Length: 354
Picture 1 (spheres, helix red, strand yellow):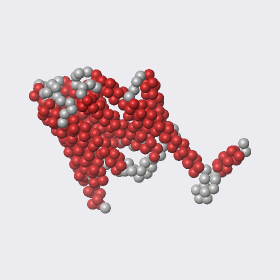
Picture 2 (picture 1 turned 120 degrees about the vertical axis):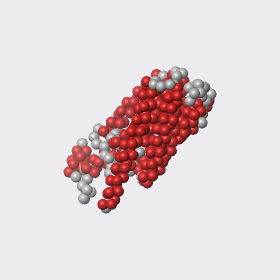
Picture 3 (picture 1 turned 90 degrees about the horizontal axis):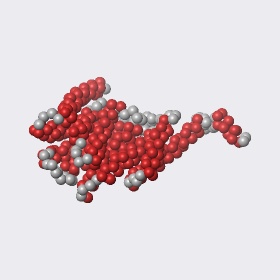
Picture 4 (picture 1 turned 60 degrees about the vertical axis):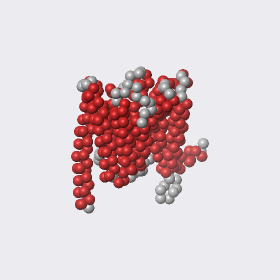
């Protein structure tokens, strides 16, 4: 028993050292690139070095950090392999773009780089799902329903304000339009998954989940910002989105080596008015979206997601009513004899004497 404890302590100390070194390199390089991009320091040679090899090295390091964690945690191995593979696919796409199109004023669209960029999303989503299954095993069904409501509501919100905006302004060949619409759609899916996972943690994700979800959300926000900027103007948004992309990679790489949180073995119960909080918030959001859809045209996808959110809210409320009825029945029944309690008798008498 002592040897197992000593081995665990050695592993935690090693993980802490790796985490510190990763953080210094990843976040330090991200800060350097942010200063360069925002302040415009250096000439063209420095621009290529910062936006090319250094940028790619940060992303590659983050991917390798996730693969390294996969070696050390058999229970989460597949999840971290998928996340690491997604980040390395992103790095491959970025490296290809840097070497072949960095100075090209009219780069092709779509390009081979898009294969790496697009591969990032399904790999991240699959890894996130496996990580949820490994770390959150037993949980109140109401939280799963809250997660579904939150994810669908976020998707409806993002589709209305982001996807529809980009779709209305997408121009070019059919292939260019498809690629330009694919990114915001994948970003909305990823962001919705992040919100859903936060709901699954009862809105208390903790340090490990916070770092991981911060990295995923930063990817979505940077990509959404780039898509909106590109759709509204002819300029690029690289000056501010590039550091956010690197912040995403850095957070994912450091998250892989955070202290492991053991899966919950007990059900998390919602109490009181908290059962109505998430349906009420996203119900109000959907009402606002439906009013907007009535006043101005909206895509069929945004309307469909808003309707799906309403259905999920109704199912959540019906489940809450059923759960409350079950609890009331349990409270009014003696656990030993299965006979009604005094409270049950008073309720039955009040009903029968009307």
